[in-house]
Length: 426
Image 1 (cartoon, rainbow, N blue to C red):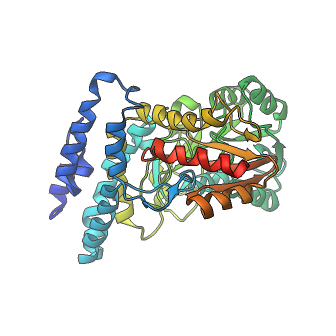
Image 2 (image 1 turned 90 degrees about the vertical axis):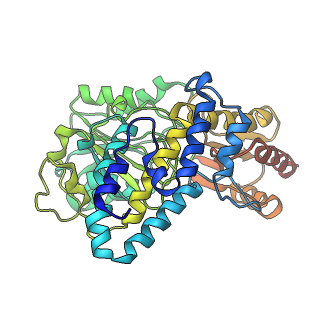
């Protein structure tokens, strides 16, 4: 990283390479390419139960040997090479901050934008790099030109930060919030679509849809809702905090006008990293949340006027993208669903244990309830007696313990979870 030219040349390496990893650890990058090649014969979705490969993935993390972390739905750990990238860039910037930050590391944002656009399946001119889903979605929520009497449809199962943002607009601008209550878990997409459709009126201007309900793991039929909304002239905001790099899809396939995600969840990027997608023709419609010389202009970069930012954190996103590419999006989804099904299948028919996630429409996240016990009791016992970290959920009519494995989770970890839940049930 001794010069801007060398830095950019490295990031411009061709398809099939791992340029961000290669900058930080060439030996690891070569090993990763070899591991990816070992699964070449099984296709993009094969290898979900290849424990040699997933053992290597696990060894690439620095997770605690004393705690089984099954709350990856909150925030995921980063592979060691991503941590190394963050530290290396941070130390590099400290050698001469105003030079190395603005003159060299900042030049890597456009190659990074291109890679993120590839993950999303859209144009780089539709992707802004920011800090998390809350920032991205608040940018849209507060940036849309809504007026008193305009209706916004959203659900009681949406994330609290988004609910609070809409309530602030309601209080400040007099818009009307129309609430729906999703009876999750739901196996029939038709039922969900019908609930949204009944809420739409001639005054509805926006529908806010959470792609995956974080409380239970329910995946919503976003495209069907979006198509229905667009047919009525309604704009579509999608909260994708839990789906990007979790399930295999491209953002335009959702039919969303606006989409945001947190990269520190399923991409395993540095904490406090995210992205915002806005369809190109919609960008001028959204005012920048923070100051910009053209807040109503057509350039997606107007949403990146954050002042001094963590260049180290931002550039380390590239290492997380490379690591994700080694696994492959489709293979990762299949593995995560395999891990969820592995432990759920062992308990699904047992008395006293209930599951609150959809069987058909879920991936890594499950929510389990033990009859006669509060979620806090179950989560507390899992940690105090078995050192298994989960999270108790009490939100609307969803009361259970959310369990979220990740790619580094082993079947041995999940066997311990199954035994612990049986003992807690008594």
